[in-house]
Amino acid sequence: IVSELVDCLLVLTALFSIVTSELLLKQKPQWGHPVHLLFRSLLRIFTPGGVSNPHKNIVFFPLGIATALASLSLGAKGKTLEEILECLKFNVTETTEADIHHSFEHLLQRRSHPGDQEQIGTGNALFVEKHLQILAEFKEKARALYQAEVFTANFQQPQEATKLINDYVSNQPQRKIKELVSDLDESTSMVLVNYLLYRGKWKVPFDPDDTNMGKFIVDRRRSVKVPMMKIEDLRTPYFQDEELKCTVVELNYKGNGKAMFILPDQGKMQQVEASLQPETLKKFLWLFNFSFILRMIDEFHLPKISLSQHYNLENILPEMGIKEVFSKQADLSGITGDKEIRMVHKAVLDMTETDTEVDATSRAIYNFQSSKMYPMLLRINVPCLFILFSKGSQIVHSFANIVDPLEN
Image 1 (cartoon, rainbow, N blue to C red):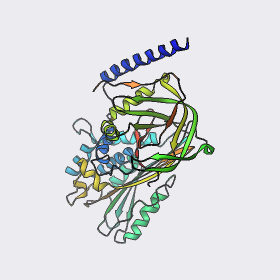
Image 2 (image 1 turned 90 degrees about the vertical axis):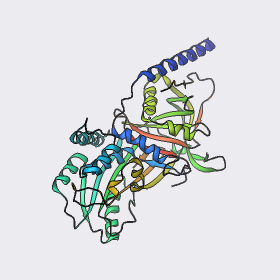
Image 3 (image 1 turned 120 degrees about the horizontal axis):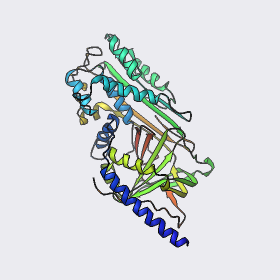
């Protein structure tokens, strides 16, 4: 009888896989929000072949970068404005600028009222040379639409201005980012700061007493010893994508947070990254919504992580078409009438036993392996991708390519 039940489950799983694939092929992706579209562009830049090093960790916040660009567009004019809106994939002939800003206002308001089990901090700040006159209309709209603050700074005294900005950021919720800027000079006239900090508690926490040193395989030549968390008898969505050559696992937070771990098969990281479009992520989340694909993982191992990365966006955004805003031809007359601006992005990801902090058509084949024939052990001890979502809106809060948990 047991053998017949197992065979029946395998047949049902195969049928479900085929039906699901057909439905997904017919389903038109609806992820048109600029955060998702920007995420696609950022992946092309950050992943191998772009500005990043394929042997380094990658951490960035698509939501934070998109919000910073949208808030900057409030004061941009002419070609400077066109480049920003094109990067965000807005068609101004179909969507008014007012609608664009209100869409971000609505999104930020939702992020400002998280559940009781999670903490979210998000905001924008613009620091402007004190000798420049800031237009009142810009300050009013920035505050109302983007919860943004505008400050004056004495950039003729770079050390003083650096301290002012870093003190502001370090005093925000969670206080994870200690030093955002360090290389200001007297030619700086504006610095735009955006922060997004998230702290979510695991729905099923790991027991610190079960954390032990384990091996994380960085590449074929090198492995490192890291604290490896462990949880037993974990029931969670999990499947293998035979087409993309990866394993996908979902862990939930208390409240609205949802974490996705994508483990490429050996030697398939670049293939998975190239396929990681918003439509792909939507497909994974759609599959996870089916409760009957939950699997029992007898032992789940996850490295304890603390990662931090710093990016000068003036080196990255030109690859995405935003060039004029960082040049002498920039038109930011809607802010002060001055020309140049600095933009930086720093991302922090901490993953512990109790919580996580973080400051994408063809036929698909899935292997859900529903029946429990042998003890199931799943170890995330090789380079993998981490994506933090918000339930409901399914906005991508953060993305990380974890190559070496010891590299910070």
